[in-house]
Image (cartoon, rainbow, N blue to C red):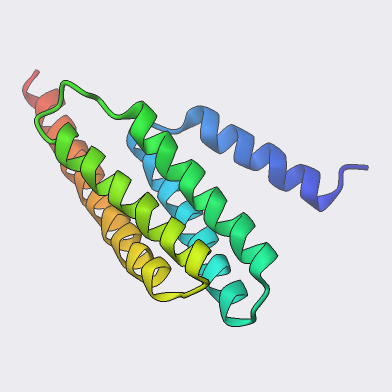
Length: 134
């Protein structure tokens, strides 16, 4: 019999394999937001080991954004600078054991996710228009 966790893992695997690049970015943002929130909560509870682990996971996701960034894009340099700033803030939060820098990153990640959602909607609407005309 398949456990609930195995079913969840299969669902997530299928979701990732069938996702568009923009959907993958949104999923990564969701993960980064979740880990940042968990890190902040762990820090507030003075559970610094968990905080460290969660903030590192957020950094790993942001590094994935950096690695997959289309360097030919006109906004690539700006995005790279933002991602580097996010990582600096997460390191500061982790080293100094203060939540404010992580909370700042959390706000940015939420904005980033909303931006990707809007970009996906725009691309989708342009795709529909393009296919009707094409």
